[in-house]
Image 1 (cartoon, rainbow, N blue to C red):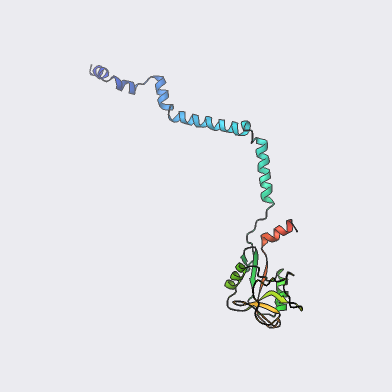
Image 2: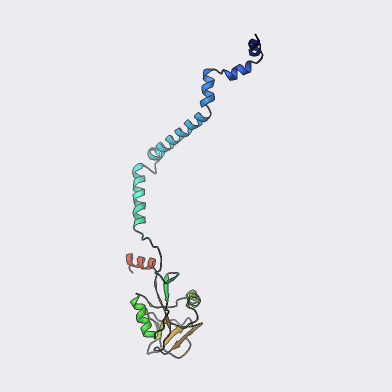
Length: 207
């Protein structure tokens, strides 16, 4: 009797404890399960649209795009370093600062043996970099005076007099300024060459 009273006085509890079959299914699956089904349907729709319905990317085009991208990356070299050790990279060049002294001509040959040349100085940025890295010693650079009084770099280009060359010798060196001395005197020396990326570009696209 008591159970019947509770049943009659609390009908909402009976509905919660004993929901209809359809409502029970909706309660269990209508929220979490429904969201999961909707997500799966969206993913299937996206895949069908991406590979079949999209006018710009089809499976064939997608595979072609992937192959082209892989080919373009494989043709580009993987540089671990732009300059070999102990060379120092700056902009598009690698620089070598010697630890021994030689005369100007011997210094030139030592640079050539390393597939480089006595360095040229092409800009104020180059000048500032060399001054910062060379230390206190005087270093030969690749500028020398020819018999006609014309200064020329070892790479064959004429010097355009954008800085003053002090002193009265035929071979140039750098301290805090650019000076000149007799070529047989011994000084430290600086080599430079293009970095590895520039060399690679020159190899595949020679001018």
